[in-house]
Length: 209
Image 1: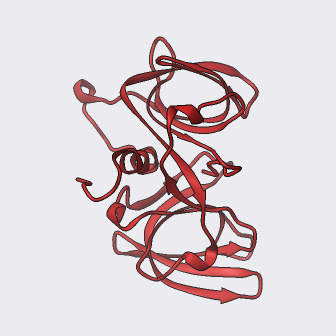
Image 2: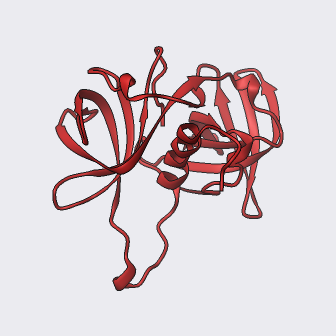
């Protein structure tokens, strides 16, 4: 599907796309494993094993699946968000109405349409993830408000100044050092979490999603 960017970068992008896909009704015989999101810092890495101390304080062993992929995040700016861009925005409902962004991921053009929609997210209680195309971006007193469109719907999301804005960048196994921050969409398995992708922070930039 993606042939125009580096394999590690392209497959790293599917971390976000696949992690944000909403659950669909399935038959028992083809039910997929339950998905979980692991956020934390690396304790150790070796072979197909990654030990992570989660943000909740638990230390867990993550098994890396055959052919697992790795990517990182790089800083972007709210001013980089332009009409026509495809973005993933985690947000919370605002007291005055609408949503306020917790973080923004700007997808490269090759990933436009990946995981399109708006659904529950577990970054914070009551948060949601919206993968959508920017229809309009307007500068305001306290930041920027974007109107995004997805599946025939529109949503306005305020992006306050200081909100983390990132894009996806390449990474290597050498970046999996103790203390590095990771975001891992994984499958629940009898032996513990099984990961096909890992998103790791580097150069002082951490995965905000």
